[in-house]
Image (cartoon, rainbow, N blue to C red; front, top):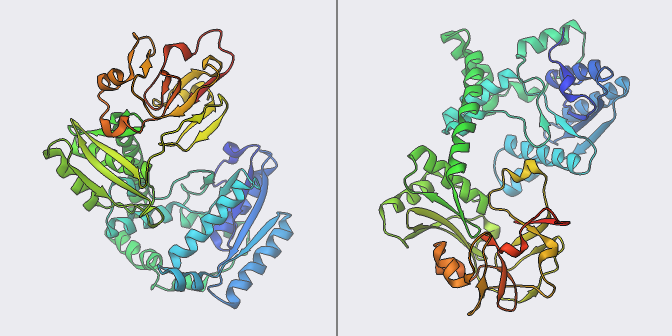
Length: 440
């Protein structure tokens, strides 16, 4: 009985999240049976959450014994989830999940595996859809359980019933988590009560919920791309056209806010406040919440700027004006808006990065510095006539609040790059360029 084809994991190092429960036993065994065929190197990680006392230790020893029997290296991690919840609040379920994925990221970061495989299956997807619908979510929330950043889910198309059949047919032992029957946990209530009730209404309810999640993911990805493509980039700032259809406008605004500060805890109320700017005059703005670690250090605003809503992250304190040496080597410049000089990316990366400036690193004269604009600055834009920097910025409709702190790379009064906007024609990439770079 083949639950899934592991060919897509050929020549990869896979670490299985192994709890010892029926789902993870099934996953580890199914990968083990195909590992030699596809040159897969298997390992496992077991996380003892400190929640169920002796039972939790029993599960850990079970995993140790099984991995030793199957010749699979096992990494064991311990956590005190009850203590974490007491100190930080939240639910036991969410705290345990955060700890698990933090450990997964460390395994990938430390190059102990290429992929982390979890045993989420089709019924988990159906339960997640119901949970998020009840809690309140948009189309993006219906993507349910997805694969991302090295996390793979080989069993997503496999049902709980098929897993049980596979385990029974192969005579695989497993442990039962006693909390799985405790309906005080939301997931368990959905699994044992809510979803079966839907199945009584329609026998294929779980299957249809999974199909819905798949369709939602496709449509969400399509709408998200439309929203992101509509965003205008000006001098390192992102702007959303006010005439975008509402569904795209909201998505584009949320994308811009998360780009500025991903942990801001943005809500529909925040989006509603920004939408009000569509009917207000240029210059009006609303404050956008920032995560705790940025409060007092920076402020994020949505500002009506002509026919766009601009998202402005302002750093408190006196702006730096330079000058600082420009090295012509890969380097991060924290001034006054952070930017980075890198070696040129490959062609596949280039096509997706519209804001990147591509330059011939050796074409910059020695003695260039990074600074803000000055009176008398001159600029010869890429494939355009020479003019004052002030006129160039005016022609590009870059407001004074941005232009006064915009980083430029210059020597004397000659400007060779306006970061986030344009390069001088003299530093463009040509057929004779030896060192290609990007300013991002």
